[in-house]
Image (tube, rainbow, N blue to C red):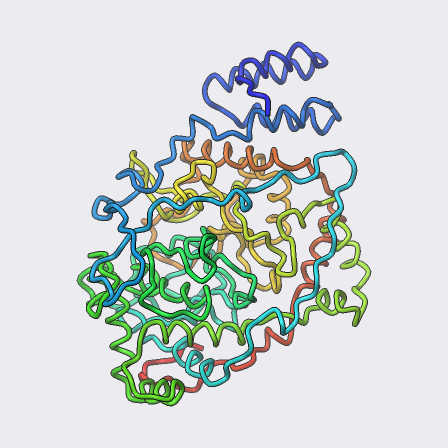
Length: 551
């Protein structure tokens, strides 16, 4: 790659293009002196759209390297963590017996070169991507019916929350497309389901869950290797039998899948399931960063389940011997249920791939755009329709955010908080797309409740960020809570713009008219598996703890 300074690039452009472009770029140069990447990016995009042969190379040269003006606080620095949670140095661990009594934070994770994003075809010819292989039962582990039945009960049982007032199903309900139907949900300390949920009771929630509840469709697929919007739980690239997690090695437990490992972490979130310090023992252990051992978060939760005779008996029968219930067994049971209940492999598109039925004409046009001119398949690739990578798509910052910077304002830097790599700032995992039309609001912050607007934003997230008008669905939390405060934070918005600009420089500019967007929406509708939406095991009538089941 050539190395250009910003002034050099803009001077070159201003002296080599027609006057109207030079005027635009002179304006951009002035903005760049003030650290504004947005104006320069938009000028280069305008030139690319007009067919300027230098624009593509210049976009890559200017915007693909990390910006020195990002100023993002990376993991491991006090600015990136709450005052009480500055991490201690990681401890390298092999096999742990007995389990450690204090949490172990992993070292900064290396990012394999093979997993870094690669530019999509940059010629002016229409991009073309091959259709994926169909999903079928062989894409998943075989159903373990007995374990899944235990998992079904645990999934709907509030026993796994600190205050015993919320279950996994509250935020991932079958009636709401495996989500919660809102942009940012309310976890523990609230009652009700979906948009009707509200903070209630003496331990009422005072803060929203910082990210949108992700859909659970096909999370049990064999090839899936990353979990959560930021991929903080993932298969270890250096050891396919191991996992990378926020709490370091978990070798003293035995997991059936990365989905099972994922199930450990919602109960450790104060906003989701654990509660606030002082409310219960689970919350106190989380606040002390005490996760491992019998009196750590997971040991306390396992003891709760083990103390319920029906659960203990079910696990004893399943494993064929009497023993205390372990947190890894609980996680494996939850995963077995989710793998089966939220398996979506029979949409019209899946039947088309299996050559069982044709697509409706408008959906077929949308498929041709998706795998052609629109370039969607550059990221939504393979049978699961995801590259399992992370991209900065300029999502508007809604709600409390996941981190605070050295100036105190909230933000969510996404993948960068996991890897410590500034190039990953504001990048989030490419979602899978089965049942996508049923899983809104969309985006890691749930910023879009209109899927057409979400697609428009994806085509040009840099300009989309500037024209965004809030369209969130949020349960009421209080008049003094400003969910849109960060939209007016110029420093934060500039950082998100710069990250999106670098991401978009990797791919050709795509311009679609309203009819073409409509065709894409028809194709996305053809990804709906109505049989899966109806449910396989459904909501149990009761759970062994005797606590209420949310319906």
